[in-house]
Amino acid sequence: QVQLVESGGGLVQPGGSLRISCEASGRTFGNSAMGWFRQAPGKDREFIAAIRWNGGATFYADYVKGRFSSAIEKAKNTVALQMNNLKSEDTGVYYCAAEFGIIVTSMRSSRSYAYWGQGTQVTVSS
Image 1 (spheres, helix red, strand yellow):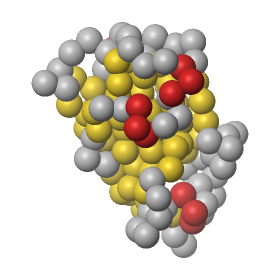
Image 2 (tube, one colour; image 1 turned 90 degrees about the vertical axis):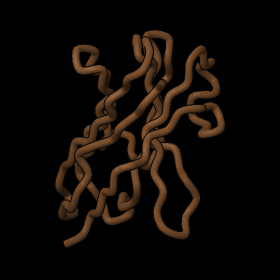
Image 3 (spheres, one colour; image 1 turned 30 degrees about the vertical axis):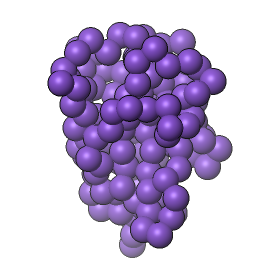
C-alpha cells in the first residue's frame, strides 16, 4: 500500500521560509518520480517541482525557481521541499505525488502521477 504523507505546512510571513516534507511508504521508491503541486481556492492545481528519487532529473516551475528546492532524504524515505522568500501568491494546499517508471518528459504533469498525499496547508500572510 503506497502512502504519501505531507507535513510541515503552516503560517509564515512574506519573505519567510518553510520546509515541508512528504514521507513515502509502502514500497520501494527507487525508480519513482516525486512531484510537488499546489492548489489555491478557486485556482487550478499547478506544478511546483519534480525530482527523481535516485536523482538525475529535477524540475521547477518558473515562478518558484530560485526560491524553492526539492531533495530526496533517502534515510527518512522523505522528499523535502524547501521554500524560501515566500510570497502571498504561494498560499495554497501543497501536495506530493509519486509515480513509478515515469518518463522524464512527463514529470511536470499532474496526470502522470497515480499516488497522492492529502496535502498540507501553506499560508503566507502578514
